[in-house]
Structure formats: structure tokens, C-alpha cells
Amino acid sequence: MLQIIKGAAQEANSASSPVELMEAVVTQAPPELKIMLKSNSKLPISKGIIIVAEHLTRHDRIISIDYEYPKMWEEDSDIGDEAREAESSRNNIGQGPSVPYEKYEMKHAKVTFEDVLKVGDEVLVASLQGGQIFYIMDRVARYE
Image: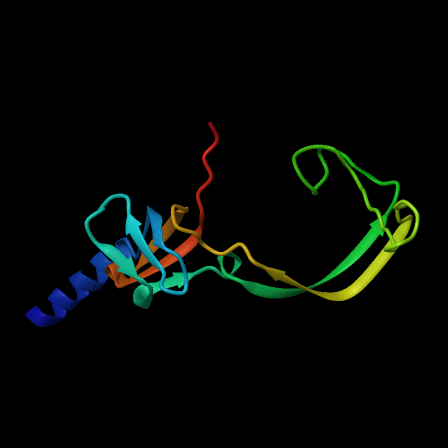
């Protein structure tokens, strides 16, 4: 009976804080990834217990592009934090000056995202399973 009560208490304690968020710094870039927690700068964490969100890795995506000129994206649109005008140019080598596209469609183009983690990147890390797995969620950006 005592063992059952101890087990239930341990499960309740684990469930009360299953994830802890921490800041860390990348000390070694992939493929031999290592990070150092800011709260504990004595022990580096190695790639064997690190999971990285895909958007922080080199990966491919299939995209489609619909382009129209002239087009103005307003500041309060879903496209960004400031107004932007669509721009494009093309230039056939050995031909005259570049001219803007008026309308352009590209379907199912492959794009490779190359912005992998680098030494010195500050990252947000979730500690899972009591510190046995560390999940790098995203880079940390600081606005001065």
C-alpha cells in the first residue's frame, strides 16, 4: 500500500510541471549540436538528448508563387508589419535592361531553407521528462 501511495505522489509531482521553459545558447553548430543553458552554464547539453524544431534546420518545402504588379501590401494586412510594394525584375543575359513582371505564377517550386542554428544563437528550450530531453523551440530575438 505504501508503494502505491509513493507512486501516486511521484506521478502527481511529475504531472504538475511536465515542461520547463529555459533560455540557452548554441555553443556548437549542427551536426554536432551543443547548447548551454543560461541558468546552468556549467554543463553543455549534447545532440543525443536534443530535439530541434524543423524550421531551425536545413529543410525543403514545396511552394507556389502568385505575383502581380503593381500590388501594395498595406501595413495592417497579414503580410507583415509595414506597407510594402511588390517588386520584380527580369533580365535576359545579353539583352536590354531588366523590366518588371506584370503577372507571374510558379506552382510547386522546391525551396530549401538554409538558416540552421549557429554558434551564439540564443534559443528557447523546453525541458521534457524531467530534463532527459531538451526541445529547441525557436531562436530568441531581443528588441533594444
